[in-house]
Length: 209
Figure 1 (cartoon, rainbow, N blue to C red):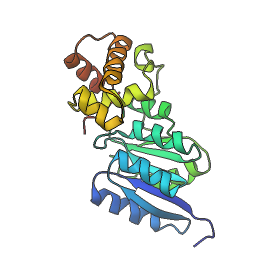
Figure 2 (cartoon, rainbow, N blue to C red):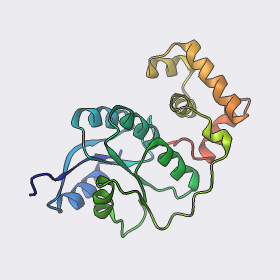
Figure 3 (tube, one colour):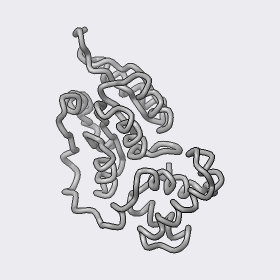
């Protein structure tokens, strides 16, 4: 094994998927998997603890999607390269992840997934986008106006959490969450929770997994 292999953290909520990716990566002498996480919150903690060079991250994760987890990981350690794997090819999903700081975005459903090559490239600082992705048009201003904290609140709203529950999860007061909720609705020009949830899912702002 080389003296300085590329260190990787795998993040996927399916254990069998992680096993497959680990085998694929560890067949390469210059890559070493140093940890695994099954959800976004665990990924943030492990990335801070292990400081991998690359995080291979599923987009659709329980409680915190890959974009939000990416933002939180990079806020703590901007040197980490995040490679998103997703079933979604819609531009909104790709844009959300890139704006969160992801260095790469690959589609999971491809049999010829070039994971190894992509890990090497993002570790070197190169952006990697799946060639099957359509060009990404400029974002609508309303979707771009949300802060990372508002994105976290929106994710929890979509999962049916009350203001009090969101406050507990994020370590905020219920009043602060209420302000975030009002700001989100104002930014997206939506006036009730049901419409907010539908818009968030359809636009790719959050994941429902």
